[in-house]
Image (cartoon, rainbow, N blue to C red; front, side):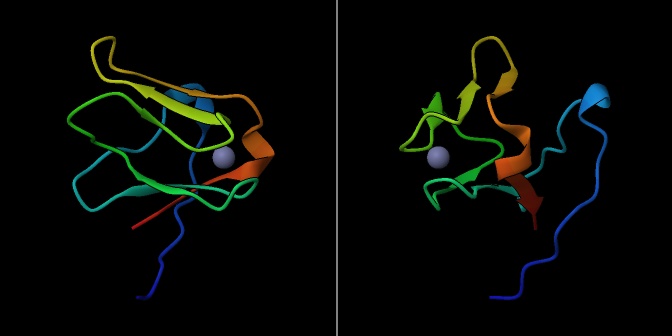
Length: 67
Ligand SMILES: [Zn+2]
């Protein structure tokens, strides 16, 4: 699969979409940006709170977005 990494400004929020995924460079997990339920990566660097519509990233340098 070809990954097209997106450049974004976290101050404006994280990109989201059905074809957009988040990658944790710490544990290597890939998670969808629009999950049906709350989801996080194994090391908890990234967590998506679906109910609150919020994405939290602890270590932004180990976080990337691709589609
Ligand atoms: Zn992780």
